[in-house]
Structures are given as structure tokens and as C-alpha cells.
Length: 337
Ligand code: AMP
Image (cartoon, rainbow, N blue to C red):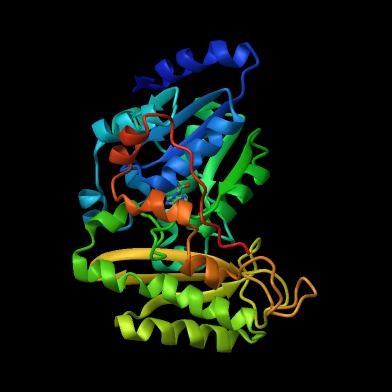
């Protein structure tokens, strides 16, 4: 694996491969790699000849200075993990390389960026995301770029961006990877103290409760949101927002008639976490809720497969990778039944 720090080096590393007709996959990250990132890299490894991972804590998308300052930075460890996962090129630019003096451009997606995270974090958050994603796509010119369903609104915003600007890239979305107890992996989890880690389970509990009610036939959004909110009570966590929205447009839904995304954000002490799950009406497949078939989102959130349990039980993916001694392979726990 080569580590490059400038756009010139990145292009020089990739141009011969592109000319040779090889497929290039890009996995944009802010580092502090965990199994969620490795799932994206694993998918890219399966689908592409060359895999590029970008490692850049993008100041433009942080609405809170303290969040930016304490965001975990561990490049050496990330480089070990990326190399072990079969990454070809690690692109780790400086802030000055990405935003040189005189930088004066922003890319903004309207509409789908303006609710939930767009309200909670302000317009500058998604403007920062869409600007950096556009820049990374122009720098690496990948055939496929990989994003996690964990950041569901980001996926919708990026899809809109790519479509509206006719960017020649395919967007691949990888299911959320979770801890055995259901907590979605996030670089910010490392900042939780033990009490906060326990309270963070309020988020998957909310999604599970709504998923169970949906699987039992409940279609009223109000009832599903109430079930989700009540499930957070025992953890003494109030949601910052809790919403049931249409998955492609993010428009709020009154009733569950087709697939819907339940989105939740909450502040655990001074750490902010987000999560989401796809819910579907119990009989959307024409089957009664109790008929055996795909497990409900709630069941999936609750009970990861033994294989995943084993993989995710180790908290440090670097240890795991060392003991396996081969590129990481993993099955994400999907919220889609
Ligand atoms: P970040 O480094 O947090 O910006 O995340 C980089 C990419 O990894 C984004 O596309 C995220 O959605 C994705 N990602 C983060 N956490 C997870 C997870 N638990 N499961 C799947 N993808 C994830």
C-alpha cells in the first residue's frame, strides 16, 4: 500500500491504472477506522481492481469546534488496518492541500440536506460534506465510491449531488455494521465513557422497538415514534430528533405503507450519535407478520449472526486483522429484513 499526501501524487498513482482500464474504488473516511469502514473497503476490494481510501478529518463539515478538536486521529493505526484490508493507495492529505489559501468554492445540495442533520448541525455541515465529496471524486476520479448506510441522510444527499452534477461515478451503499449489542459502530463511540456507552444503546433500542411494532402490524407513524421514544426512556436519553421518512426523498411519512427509514439522533453526554433502520409494513410482502421469512429489523438489530458476533466482539479491528493474517472479510448486519 502506498500512502500519498498530494493530489499530484494521487493522480500519478492512479493514472496508469485508469489508462489500463482497471476499475478504481474510493472509500472516503475521516479515519479512526473500525469494522464499519472495513466493510466498505471489503466491498470495494470485491468490486474493484484498485482501492483508494481517503483519510481526511474535514474541518468544513464540523459545526462544533470541540467536536473537530477531539475527533480521534490515529493515522499509523489506520494505515496498518488499511494495508491489512488490501487497500492499494491511502490518500492522507493535509488541510492546506485540500483547502489551499484562496479556496473560495462550496457545493451545496438543497432539499434533502435541509432536515434532520441539516437542522441539527446547520447548513454548513452538509455543505462541508458535499464540497469535500465533490473534491475527492475529482481528485481520485473513481468508478465507484462507497458510503455507509449508517449515515443515511448523507447517502441521500450524495446520490442527489452525483445525479445533479452528472458526476461519472457509481455510488455503492454498505449496510450498517453494529456491535454485538446493536450499537452502530462509529469513530465517536471511542469517546464514550462506560456510562455513556451503556446509555448509547438507547438508539438501537428505539429502532428495535419501532421495528417490532411495525412487524406486528402497526402503521401509524405517531405510534411507531412513541414506541421508539418510550424505549429510550430507561436509558435516560431524549432523542434530538426521531423521524420516519421516505428513504429516497426523506419526506416525513404519516403512515407506514412501504419501506421507510426511521432516523434517530441523540446527545449522550457531550457525544452526539446518529442511527437509522429501514422499516417495512408487516404485510408489505403479502405475508402475515408471524410467517417465517426475513427477520424483522428489530430481530436483526438485536441478534447479530454468530459469525458477526465473533468478529465484532473484538473491540480492536487491528488485533483481529493481525490474528487473521489476511485481508478483512466481513458480513455487515443489515437493517433490511
Ligand atoms: P466517517 O469516517 O465517519 O466519515 O465514515 C466514513 C464512511 O464509513 C461513511 O460513508 C460512513 O457512513 C461509513 N460508516 C461509518 N460507520 C459505519 C458503520 N457502522 N457501518 C457501515 N458504514 C459506516
